Amino acid sequence: MESAKDWGIKKLLLVSFFVFTLIVLWPHILPVENLNMFYIWDVGQGQWITHVSFNKCNHFDAGGEYFPQKKIKSLCLHKINQLWLSHWDQDHISFANKLTQLVENVCLVQMPVGPTSSKKLMKIKRLPLCNTNPYSSYLLWNPNLPLTKHKKLTANDLSSVILWKKWLIPGDSPTHQEKKWDEILPIQSAKVLVLGHHGSRTSTSEDLLNHTPLLYLAVASARFKKYHHPHGEVVTRLRGHGVPTLSTQDWGSIGVRD
Image (cartoon, rainbow, N blue to C red; front, side, top):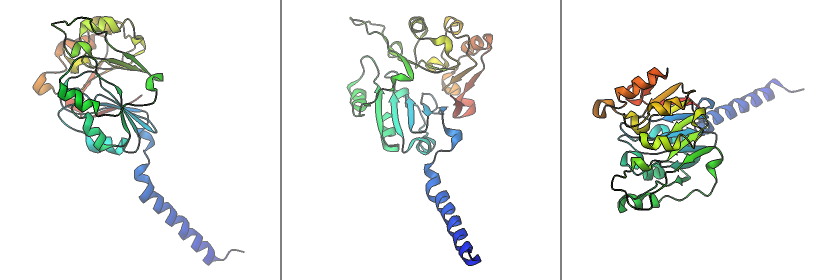
């Protein structure tokens, strides 16, 4: 029969093991409530969106005025970090290289389309390319480059657009490009829209909203006090479709279950 002393020793060992696990291992275990979440980070005027799963973080753009390093590090430090860049604007790519210094296993899935400065190109080319196939979960639209130079072509015109389950992320794609990709991507399934061009009135057209009848939320990654995004016309259009708008200007970083 086990003596009281033996039982006391076993109890002490169990408690010690529990305390060890709590102190040493817990910081590396992601709480369940942070899994399968989309985070629209408060980066000021810019865009950085992260989808967090058990072993992977997908980052859609990585730019802005502020670098949300503490939270991203806590969520993504030891995971596979895949980076998608919609276009060449600085407020979408400015922190791409800093991400490699912050977390492990960073690779580039989506290179911006079109011409850019040699300085920007060299920075992004330093990122290792992903050797996996991430497209099984994501639907991607890339603009077709014209065969000849177009004098009015901008980086916004060349924004790539991503649809992931219920999430529609159009970068800075303007209304005339919306007419092209809303016929190709099955956007009628989209329920959450990250506002194109931070909520500028040159994006999020009435036509786009008519093609996304299931939308229940729009999010603007913007700084209204300086850039007046999201624009009042866009908010009014969304309200007319019964879609509320949240802005990182007012709410800080926003997390939504996928």
